[in-house]
Structures are given as structure tokens and as C-alpha cells.
Image 1 (spheres, rainbow, N blue to C red):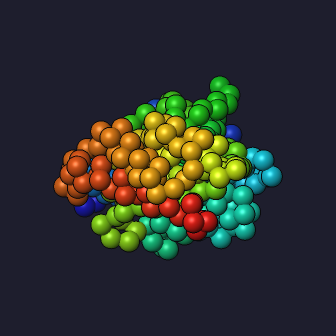
Image 2 (image 1 turned 90 degrees about the horizontal axis):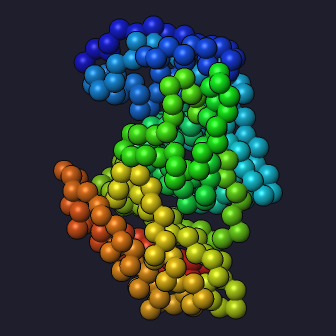
Amino acid sequence: MKFPAFAYHRPETLEEALHLLADEDARPLAGGQSLLPMMALRLAAPTMLIDLSEIAALRQSDIGMDRARIGAMVTHADNAASFDIWARLPLMSEALHHVAHPAVRTRGTFGGSLAHADAGAEMPLVLTALGGHVLLRSLAGDRRLAAEDFFLGHYTTAIAQGELLVGAEMPVSPLLWAFEEVSRRAGDLALAMVASGVRIEDGRCREVCIAASGVSDRPLRLTEAASALIDRPLDERTIAEAGRIAAASITPRSDIHASADHRRALVDVLVRRTLTRLAQGDC
């Protein structure tokens, strides 16, 4: 199918891009791995595309000892190859290897994935699990939104007219993390995915985070399942209990790929897998 007609701009500065975004029918173009297929299928028809590929400020990251800031135009491939991300954001490093295929990871961007807000994508879950924030900029100024306030639903975010997602910040977590997902084929969007993190002292869980996606219209923190592990050993019994609680706490959707019951069962299994890996030190 042919693309709808559109104007094309490739600004070299962030300020120029923000002025172009003032047009109410303009859309930013990052890696193009999601927007262009949607345009080809006439699911999106912006009259102006603003190519962000020449804006160097959006390709910069700062991975510190306590906090990381990642630019919107950093590709998945560059993040996956980053030693600093491997060392300080191991959850992101592990999840990146599940993102689509090498060709897509080479073009697809971190910010593009967040802004697209597909419930089956890995980066929104990573940002939510780590308690990260999205950084937005417009001609009126900057906004910093927690991930749980940014993702409003499937393909729906809190980005306002004229705003551009310029990056995201997240803490360098003290927890040990494990990530697991199930998809129909390697590289497909996930039917369900789970990120689990724990801090164990004296043989008991002192901090726990369990988050899931692919089973709702946005990433979810499964706080009830995480709370069930606090001050308890991470053994077979507590792991099984956390899996059951996690599955019972979600209301997944049915579609042509999987039923709601199947997704609920997957969350149970994936919570158990991630927690078992953490208990065994396989992370």
C-alpha cells in the first residue's frame, strides 16, 4: 500500500525540531520501525514528518554510578553494546536481546519505543520496573513524568501537542534482576513478559519489584505479588505463591494470539522463572 502524502523535514537542532512540532499534524520520526509501517497501512497519516536523525543532542547518554540518562535517539543496538548499561542497568541489557531482530535493533531507538507505547514492547516495561522517568521538551519548557504516569494505554502516552520525548532517566538499581518473556516466534512482540528484582539480606527478601507487560494496555507493577515476598526467604514455596498472586492480580486481554487465561498462566510461569533464577544466582 502506498504512503499518504506528507512533507518531510530533517532539522539539525532540537530548537528547530520543536518549532516544527508546533504544527498540530506533525509527527517526529525516530527509527521509523513502527511509524512507517503504520503509515503504509494507513493507520497513521501525519501531513509532516520531522526526522530527528541529525540532532546530536538526542543521541547522547550519561550512565552514572547512581543514575542513568539515555537519549531518545540512541538505538537499541548501541544500548545493547554498551558496557555501562551492561554493568549498571543489567535489566535493560538482558531485555534488549529480546527486542525484535538485529536489523530492527540497528534502526529502532530507545525513545521511539517509549513514545510508541506498545504493550508488547520491552523498553516501556524496563523503564516502569526501574521506576524511571520520561523527559519531555516543548517550546514552553520541560516536563519530567514518572513512567507510570506517562504510559496511559496501548499506543497512548501523556505526550502533549508540541512536546518531544528527548530521553529518559532511571536509577541504577541495587536489586538483582531477571527478565523473561514468551512470544510466538523469536523477535515477535511478547505475549507476556516479566521483570523481577530482589535484594536479599540474611537469607530474606528485603526489597522486591515484579513488573509485567504484554498482559495489559500498559506495563504493570505487580505490587501485591512483590509484597508477599518481603521478609521471607526466596524458596520454592514463596516463589510459587508469588506466581499465583501475580496471575490473579491481572486482567489480561484475549486476542488472535492468545487468550486471557493463557496470558494469566504465562505470568504465573514467568514470575516463577525469574524468581527461581534470582534465587539460584542466575542473573
